[in-house]
Amino acid sequence: MRDDEDDDDAPKGPSAFSRGVAYLVARPLLAGFVCAVIAFIALAALVPHRAGMSGMSFPVPAVQVVQESAPTPEAKQEKAAEGVLPEKAVDEMKAVPPGQSAEAPKPAASTPVVADVAVLVTDVGLSRRVAEAIDKSLPLETSLAVSVYASDPAAIARAFKGSERDVWVNLSCQSIQPGIDPGPLAMAGGLSKKENQDLLQKQVELVGDSAIGIFLPDDADLPLQSDLWRDIALEAIADNMMVLDATKTKVATQLYIQKSESKISAYLKTDLVIRGDVAPPEFQKALEAALPTIINLEQSIVVIKNPSVVTIAALSKWIDGLAG
Figure (cartoon, helix red, strand yellow):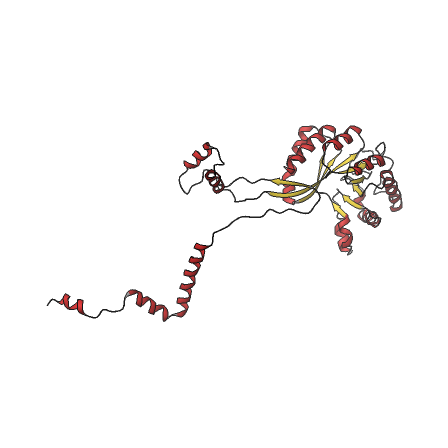
């Protein structure tokens, strides 16, 4: 009998599987880890993967800005399978080798970017044609600052309030820019608190009860005397009026320091000021340049300063584009 025949009849040792089981039993921590890995792999195979992000909107009564994101290559493949894309686009995607993209990778985003922008038009009433263009073209969400030098500020304010627009008193103030005549009712940093309060009262009375608050232009010199302007603003708030400030003053910070947090909601700051008394191409360029800032801020107040009939038309199209 050959030696190899004797080996066939001899008792065989434990199999590799049995030895592996014995090895794990002798090491319970390692066995637990292996079981956990196997369970995770099984669970991942059963649960479908879902990715995406939710768009955010903010409760501000303003125009919503919607900026659509470009479709990802994966989204294009899905639309091609559904027959949504044209045949040319489908053929182009078929020509791309598997695992490669026909264009540079883009961040996945299934929802649009949403922001809110409130638009305020100033110096309303100085031109009847501009007032008519505003009433005809701009959405009701657009707020208006009525000039105290209009032919009939109170009548204009009532008319716009009747169309459910927010109306503000466009304060007449001494400008920090040289060579500008602010008019006989102008408030100024060089006047006393009592003189400024009297002038403010006259301006508010001219516009009447239709106004919800006062608007401080971006070039006003009042905030150069920060304590003076703070006191005037606080008294206006105490009289149930809101304050919309387009200057660089830090009155809101002072209110926090004085623990006047309850008054902060009535003191608003604007974010962008765009001149409307310029040539249409320059105005259009300024509107387009403002969009990234609006998207970045998510909530913003944009001031359109002293527009013309032509720039009102461009502004109307721009606002329609934001909402679209």
